[in-house]
Image (tube, rainbow, N blue to C red):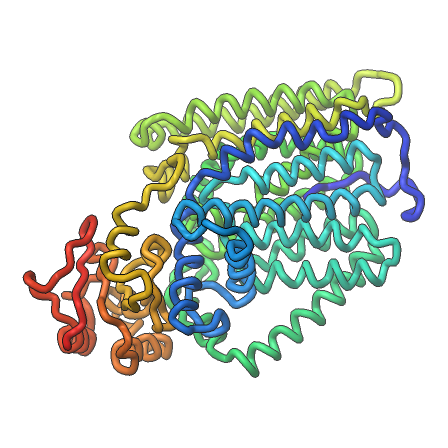
Length: 569
């Protein structure tokens, strides 16, 4: 996404000044992205996404429709992931875990590239060619090479939908078509996760910065789509709202449920520091805004509002996971790209500053977790100081007189794309952590996928043998055995082991039916670290004991601490 320059031309007559004449260089930006793209292609999907994909696949093989399965994600998000996974059917020999991982990533990358093209077409209608090209390519790079914990999370999908909304609303020559297409994409930012609704507002504000009329009609179309979606899901998928209400009840202590306090602000500040360090392009956002806003106060006000909206979802959710901030680096990349293409005088501080911050992140994020926890204060202060210094350097650069500051050389797009790509690599390199100091700071990227032990277990049980999973959802992704339980990862039964009130939720009673009504499972697969049978409700313990033989003699050898018990005959 980008904070663009004011409209200077009629929307049907985009400016073509400075457009490159050398056709051979048009593909160079894509080639700059290619090495980093190939690197991320072999990074395993994060556990949350594997949970969702594995749950959809395992339940689907067991006869449960995507409309009915619970993977702790709304139906719009489930349909999106199911579409990506369906791409596998077009490619033979991709049934292995490594194959599934690569194909899902590849399918997502193709979608991202399409979204980037739409964004470029939309920006080109209102902005100079260099602004449109660098902003669109930097945004595409931020999505393609996003931190592994962000990639394909609902918050990340909402950010991608927001990018699509800006492009789709502005690309068509006819405003009404842009309103319909952009309105649908804006609606998707809400449909994939209600907590990401602020991204819809961000998209509409960015469209308004380009064309107010299109923004108003896009907002109207989005409201219609959202209203229809609400009515249809209420009527035909009522369990979606039951799940939503019960999920919200589980996080009753999040910031939206109580008055602001210093503890929440302190946690938010630390999480924001992590975002800045893991995605150093955020450090350049103030300097980029200076280039785009110049001396117009209303543009600065707009930037402050958008910045606040970009972190509001993460603050409201109150869990401080890095992927809740997924829109922040995407937004920063678009703004930085627009500024880099906008004024040649600012390209030196914007380019050098970004590369320097990126190299610093590549070093500090790879330090031991103990060092990172101890040095968070010092490192974050250094990054904040860097943001101020780069912004000051940019102000001085803009004061320098020069011929045609808006003129773009033919290599501007190439250099801009390269710098944005380098900026996103820090979190994606092998050995980099999921977070600098917060939750998952000790989880690191690994290249390739290792799943032989779980595939061997699945083979010994029988690849098509139905099982009951009492484990985190990523186990279903690793094993691939079908389950006829609509809760392939029984979240509600698991929450009931340590949140007593969860046993009163409607979702808990529905989840319990996997033990009372479903008799197809030939084995139960238990992960004691995730599901404590000893702490479960007595009814759950009794049902498990009646259906499965978990004696030491009957257990099936399994990797790690898994407990696999056969069904009683």
